[in-house]
Length: 267
Image 1 (cartoon, rainbow, N blue to C red):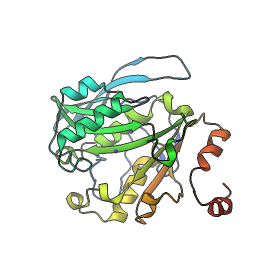
Image 2: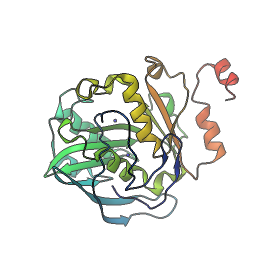
Image 3: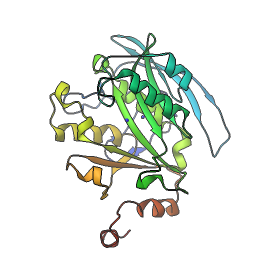
Image 4: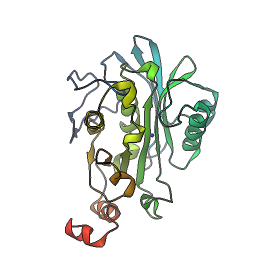
């Protein structure tokens, strides 16, 4: 609606091996997240809790042609409240910056919520929101406290092609907290900035798969109605390195509400 790096490179199923200074060329014109390679300076970091429930709070500085942009994970609600939301952030809020700020404050205040904020001179120019799935959705059942959702990622139209999406994704996922978690994300075409990018839905889709794949997200099938509304919509899943087969079995049982379809697919 995922900077600093934990120096633990892994193979990405949709994007190959990843690294901070990776120079591979990516297809297409960048959408609201940018892939330009720019110098990246690791900042300070502090481990905040014991192993098993690790939260690694970090800040970093991304050097861009527009100036230095600060990237901060687990951004506190009070910090978000103090920021101005850049006018180029509009895809999820439908041109309502205050609504967007309120949504991010709610994520920051929620149990397990993690807002990755990109800030330039007191202005929010990009964000990622990670949180527990809503209880109103099939993914939000009790007893699935290891299931999380990448709810949104957006970069302001005024700060694209600066490498912000890649930096924010590093801040979000180079974090041992998610090693024993399963994370889902849904990418819907009606949230994509096709107008400003000049991309088709399929081009945009492939570019998002490329970005998310660098951080171990892979496409999975589901009969969730919102995903099925458009063939270009995406449902991606990230299995942490320390997740168990039992967790996967429980998660897989949520993918299809139709028992016959689930049986055919081995779930």
